[in-house]
Length: 165
Image (cartoon, one colour):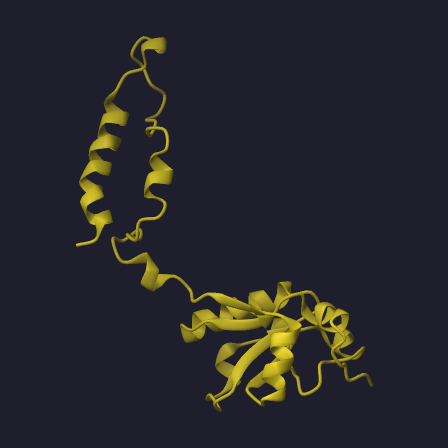
C-alpha cells in the first residue's frame, strides 16, 4: 500500500481537530476552520486525486522541450514530423525546412492521422503556442509531446536554416 494511503486517516483527524478547536483570542468563536500550518504542503505530493484515484495516471503526459541542435539532429535523421503552429502571416516570413503548417487555432491532434513512425515536434515563434499545442497533443495521445524550446527565434539564433518565400 502506498505511504499516502496510510496518511489519509491522519489527515482526516487533523482536519477534524482544526475545525473543532476554538480560538482563545475571540472568546472561543471561529469564523472558519483553519488547517494546521504546513498541512497543504505535507499532502501536495500525495498521489490521491480528488476522487481518490491515482493522480499520476490521470495527469497529462509531460511536454519535452528540444533545443535547436536536438531538433536539427532529429530532422537530419528523418525522425520528425515538424508542425508549425504560427499564424499564416508569420509563416509567410519563413519556416523551418520540411515543416507543415497547422495554425494553433486549427490544431486538432485527432486530425494528425495515424502515426507514420516519426515523432511529432511542434514549434511557433517563441515556444509558448507550441507548448499549448503540445499539451493538447499529450492529452490526446497520453504520451509526451515535443516542441522547440524558444521557437523559431531560438532556431534562427542558433544559425539553423529557414525557408523564406
